[in-house]
Length: 161
Image 1 (cartoon, rainbow, N blue to C red):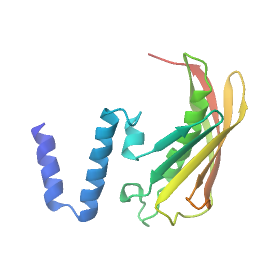
Image 2 (image 1 turned 90 degrees about the vertical axis):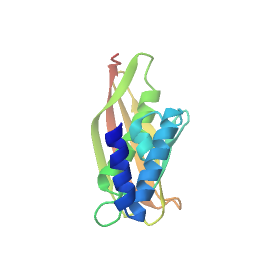
Image 3 (image 1 turned 45 degrees about the horizontal axis):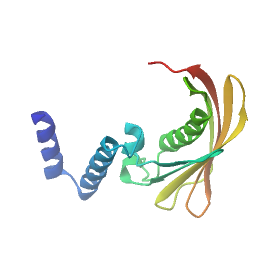
Image 4 (image 1 turned 90 degrees about the horizontal axis):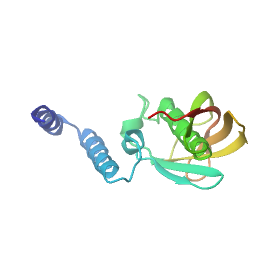
C-alpha cells in the first residue's frame, strides 16, 4: 500500500493539470464501481453509461484525454471497445440462463473524427440463431453525426464459473 501511496503522491506532485484530472476521474469511477454503479473495471475506467432495452442497447461515454490518440482524437481502439461492448451487452442479454455471448467477428468502418465531448454507441440485433447472434452497432456524436458503423457475430457458449 505504501508503494501505491508514494506513486500517487509523485504523480500529484509532478503531474500536469490534465494528468491530475485523468487520475481524479479514474479514481472516482473506481469508487463508483465498488458501489455497484459500473459492472466492469473497463466500463468504470471509460465511464460507460449503459441503457439496455428489449431490442436495443445504448452506451454513452465522455471524450477525455484518457482515450485520446497522439492527435488528441478518440483512439480507434477505444471506438472498437465501445462498439464491442454495446453490441456484446445486447447479445448477452439475449442468451438463455447459463450461457454467454463471445465475440467471434468484429467489423468496423471508421467514418469521421469526433468533434464533440461525448460518444454514443447504439446496437440492435440483426439475427439471433441457436448458436450465434449477429448485431449491428454505431458510434455517433450527440447531434447524430455518424462516426463509425459496425457489425459483429457472437458465439453462444456455456458460462464458466
